[in-house]
Length: 151
Image 1 (cartoon, rainbow, N blue to C red):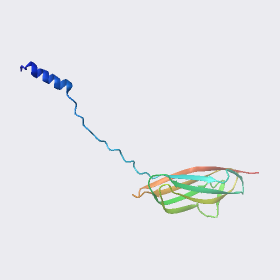
Image 2: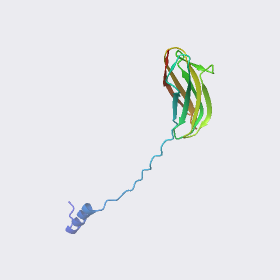
Image 3: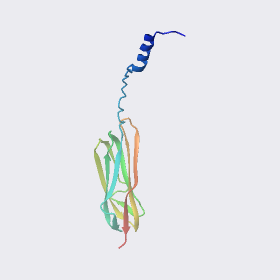
């Protein structure tokens, strides 16, 4: 056993008990949010109930609520073909846009006619890409429901 003087033991005890801890400053950087592409698809009709043979205007709105631009958008809408029919176009109403910036919107509209009594639905779909050419699909199959009646 190593013998220590009283004074040496007292110094050692002071070092152990009253020594200031070393402060290690470690900075964790705040993570940067990942840029996101997000397109909100809204389908609205002038009326939600109408008669067979009556014509209603449907509007599709696309809003880029993400933090990056939406590129090469392809969008379209489709009505349930049993109860509703598209007017003025032989195929599904659609469009193409090269660019929709953050916070920007685009719209297109078309007419449908009540074909037979029942509950018809109109849905929309958007396909777009981000600047890295990643593909995103946004689908809303029954965005608006329309009741076709017989009076």
